[in-house]
Length: 294
Image (cartoon, rainbow, N blue to C red):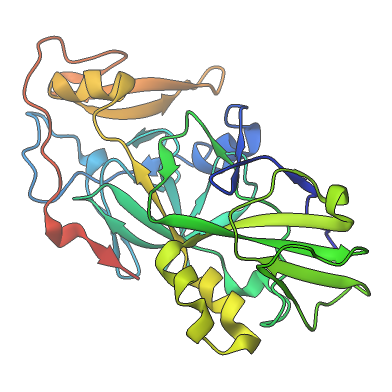
């Protein structure tokens, strides 16, 4: 059995990493570069590249700045926003998390993406066994929103929980000691500090957390986790913003010689490594028709 990680380093209850995207993220997202979406109904720059066209996965419309993995050598969209489509299910591997989340909804008006942990990762409904904290690099294009909260699972504890909000879990597989769930936001520190083998902080929507008391106890924690959480992305920022303000579309191309990934701005006259030369109006935001869910 793969044990959960015991370390909690939290900000607003969910773990963060100071490291940059690791090779695993790069291999997953960039190693199979994308055919990428351009916002439907937007005012595209002259010479709009076909590589930036919209894509679909199941019922979800995938549009710029997100992009869908394919076998092409170029991608059009933001770093860290590459998606995979498997069995009509849209998946994303978040920075440093080493775990894929299902993308259930993208709202291009509010720049919000809704993510859900796959139910198949849980052994039981009464005691969801989480293996690691969600980790988001502080420089990641995706960040938690004010709508998010968290709950904390403590597994295989030798001490009785002293927190008022602690609830003992039942039916936890592979553990012969007591496990708990806490409704408060995350507790920083080592799991051993609390006499537990492992502790995992899970992001949830605050509205679902508040409604937990009304849910059947045997599956309330699973239902709250399956309700997902939200992340925001920032459009027109950094190097991509410079490209977009010049009338281009942000993307990446693989160097056929050394296999490295290089920034690319797709312009009227072809791709460049910076911007399109003269500034023009930004590509407008996608209209509300692109707010779709699985």
